[in-house]
Image (tube, rainbow, N blue to C red):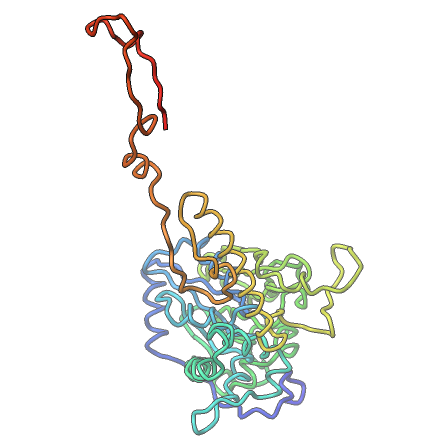
Amino acid sequence: MNSLSCKLNLPLGPSLRDPSLEADLQARLDDGHRLYVVGDVHGHLATFRALLHRLNLTPEDRVVCLGDMIDRGPDSAGLVDLLRSHPQVICLKGNHEQMAVQSVQMDGTFEAWQPWMKRGGKSTYASYIVQAEGDLWQAKQTMVDDFIWLDNLPTQIVLDHIRLVHAGYDPRMPLDMQGEKELLWIRKEWFQHEGAVDPARTVFFGHTTTTKLGDAAGEVARSEALLLDGRPAWVGVDVGAYNHVSPGLVAMDVSTFRVVKQPTLRCDRWFERINTRKNTKKNAVWKGEENLREAEVARSFGLKALASRAKKARTSTLRAQRELEEVGVVFPPQAHHDQTMGGYRIFKRADQRAKEATLPRGPTGFRVYPKTGMKRQDSGVKGRRLTGVS
């Protein structure tokens, strides 16, 4: 097993399946509902939300994320929060989740596992600090809770006609003897195998980007080996959310093989923002500063991201103040120099119309004198002379 891609000293365990979950998913398929599989999301929260919107799910449809939901991308903390609360999304454990859970100590405390931090975990750690607005204690408490949830995710789903797994299977071993080392980490031994490991089931997997499987960037990969019913032996759905060519996420309907693609949104394209290569060729591989291979949030453990967020918030606040002042809402002078968020007292200007209504209309006072020699009854408006205006 030395040829497997896992070279870390990890406490890898056996395969974990959820029979009740598998029974539920199979029943939904039998009833004609849709089941989608999604490859490695890697913390690209906004792009994943956009993909869910494209799927236009019904209440009975389900989406299975095939592991590696965290690391590398800009908002792993927000993504895990969404995954845990979304009633139609199911998750499998990937190798990045397996590395992350090593940070949870036996006494329930959090201590960042350095091999994980060097492989994309720093961006995840930082995203939790940003989510907690700089409160490190709260960030660690949330990570412990989330990582325990990640640790208890199944490592594969086996239904009547399909298998769902993160990395694949070792064709040299019986399927029921394979554990986390194979299911979460295997690469070449799996996808370079010419036959089908399960003659009755198509295997859907992520972990290895489809460009490494010989397919065009942004496209799913299908095995040339076919099952007896004509379906491919395996399908790779990790098209690369941060790939340098055609980055995005895809969801595939396991029954119809229909593909729905969502290109990585601009706000999630951290790899373009940190690219230091001067080469402007379309297919040029990006390179980050100091060989950074994860989102900018990883720098200074999210402190720079917090500072940038505060700066943007202050700018937005000042802009809002100016707009409010144009319509009659004024702030005390110290509010413009206050660097904290919230807590402003708002003083409304007196309504100009109401103010004017309290004053006499026209001149504040005058007297009317009739012209000399004119009768009182003829002293009309035309014969009046206005004087004494104060």
